Image 1 (cartoon, helix red, strand yellow):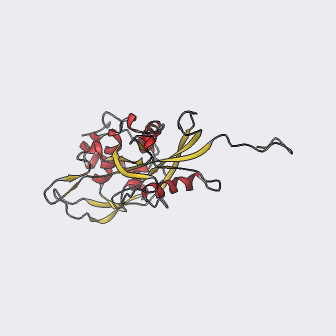
Image 2 (cartoon, rainbow, N blue to C red):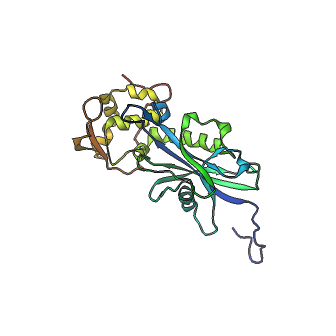
Image 3 (cartoon, rainbow, N blue to C red):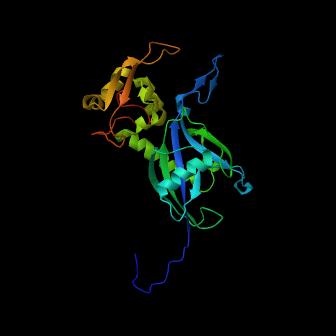
Length: 266
């Protein structure tokens, strides 16, 4: 917006940054002796990417990956660059949305920095984290085990907003399919909902869970592949499915799953 000819040039009074809350759902992996590497329960399967900076001023605290926005750069591009430069992740094509703007004057002791936080979701079974510039450690951390006091800046606030946004969108949108491979079983899909919304969903039998997804089956957005998953350690291999709908799609009505138990678990 301009005040007309001859108006004085605007002087910058704040620096703009982006920070990214990257969520994934990770399953425990067992070695030959049966020991697990990673989360041992569904409560720990929902994880967030956190990094530790080499700057001693941060006193070993964790933070979300972030960068200052360049003069010729969009927020979206800056967010993807943050993941690339801080954790060596190529986020090209990943789901990404603006989460909110965080601009309390005291949020950064180094100066006035306004951050445009972003939310990203991606399956991580084929991702390798590697610390980038200014980072000494990058790690997946269970969302429910991140103490607010362990995070730098106002990143605890960002994480809280991202948790609420993701849980809400999972109830009315098709966001969960961002966290699954190209083909998957219904128990794997159920595990995503259980990890993020409520572990009690694991007790919902496959038949009832499938009924909840009847509209997607009817529309063809969720389709059987015609083969089974590779044999696992226990039980009969499940049928494989593929999601063919738009990932930005939404349900006609909100799913009845909420913290404290699904409305029709059995």
